Every structure is written in structure tokens, then in C-alpha cells.
Image 1 (cartoon, helix red, strand yellow):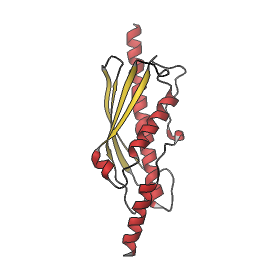
Image 2: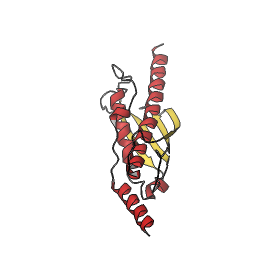
Image 3: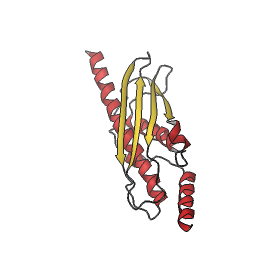
Length: 177
């Protein structure tokens, strides 16, 4: 009975905690000037199965905020203008947190990114899968699980921004020829 109460308390505590990005984990290189002169519009969606999980509530907001911080740090886009690139991030999988864990909780995150230019042409359509665990140890399993999701989200966004940066630079170089 005690184990069941501890498990339920741990799950409840995890569900109540909010996830917020850690800017120190976003490691992409910052461009000296924006690559494109347009702004961007960001849309984040999540697989309904994940959102229905007890601990799945804050993942969509975490990924959205992480993308905002990462894109801002990378300096890829100019300020918000009427003609904008559209970035869609669909969270296909985010490992459900375990009630009890003795390790770093290596979670899996799969996000499908679609980027379209202001004309509606798809310039990037990529699925990125990351498997990361917590980078900090805590005696509380819920804290390790939360941290692993933050780390996993940051790693996934880092890979996306690197790919987007490369794609936009190649497109810009092709246009200037």
C-alpha cells in the first residue's frame, strides 16, 4: 500500500511541475546577421495520446518555448514581418515518465518538423529522434524525469536548428548564383 501511495504521489508531483527550457543547453552557433529577411510563425502540436497521459501536459509548451529561445539565439530570422516562414513542430513521441527510477531516465523524443517559405513551398520536412537522459542527478525521480525531458527537448531543437540553418544557407547561396 505504501509503495502505491509513493507511486501516486510521485506521478502527481511530476504532473504538477512545469517544464521550462534551459537556454544553456541550446548550443547552436549564432549568426552575426539573420539568414533570411522574413520572420517566422511557430506552431507546435502534440500526439493526443501523449497529451492524455498524466505527465504529458507540459511537453507541448516546453517544446514551443525551447524552439522560441533556440530560434532567437540562433538569429536565423529577421524581425516579425508580414511575409513569414511557417515552422510546424509535431511531437510524435515523448517517453512517459516512470513513477520510480534509479537511473538518468533516458527518454525518447520524436518531433516532425515542417518548414515552409512565405510562398508556401516546403523547404524542410524532417523527423528528428533524440534519446537523452538527465544531466543532473537528484534523489527525487520526478526531478530527474523533468530534467531529462528538458535535456531531450533542447537536444532535439539543437538538431532542428542546425538543419534549418544549413538548409537556409544553402538556399540563399543557390539564389545568389
